[in-house]
Image (cartoon, rainbow, N blue to C red):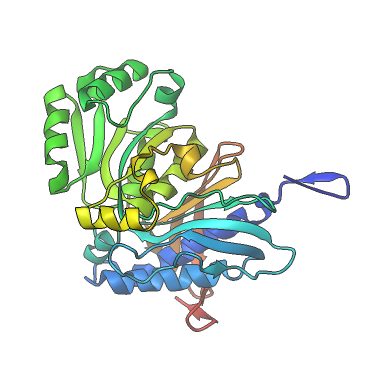
Length: 349
């Protein structure tokens, strides 16, 4: 909150819908590549539109967690400036993924979203979004009912023990729990342990931001998210989980001894054993999360075309008030334009 001429003003409220416009623009521009087999082109299109839209906002934005580190894809990168950078603009830090699920987009599969997390940083304060330099992290996410139950959930506890605590907190049988995780060979032993404990499993191909958030959503069919996924996605998901009142535990997961040694050499040795929670990844109360569906996902419907109009479905959350807004926008394609950073011009879809 800021104070101007004796009146208290919620400055973030002025720009929060600009972030929805940015995810909408990224989703709409990427849609031309849905199912066309080129994930780099799809990511490039989404990035170009998101960067162009964010640069129209009166803010001093900085990308803290960018996209592209895992596969050298196009992206908005760490320490990139975003916004107009006027002297009056708010200082805003970002964690950004123009497409969470580029492979899904390229193959025309469900589960792709455009997403960002932002935090308004007070003058003189440290950055509020944590940097996780490892490519991957081990994650465990659960919803507010489990968090509020007071049971101690530990990242390194046997999964059977964790499932028992989650089931008790939710007044469910373990057999009724649904655990989501990425369908990867590295999770084979974890999958076997979960099945042996009696819980059900929902395996996903990509798009673990939405699935990490899922246990915190009202009326969600997912009770727990666990496993190794991207580190940038961990920060983005933690911001949303915080907005919803849930909890997430995260620790960096080096893929090899070489990567571990590189992280140690870069000064991250002590942080490799640290277990972050939502507050450690996204501190403070001025957290904003926005996402728009590209293809249908558990969080949001994908884009639908009807009579020369595009229907987008987005979600906007704020941690301060734990407000969750669903935004259904109808875009008249005969009039709709998107500002692209590459050309610095408005372009029709």
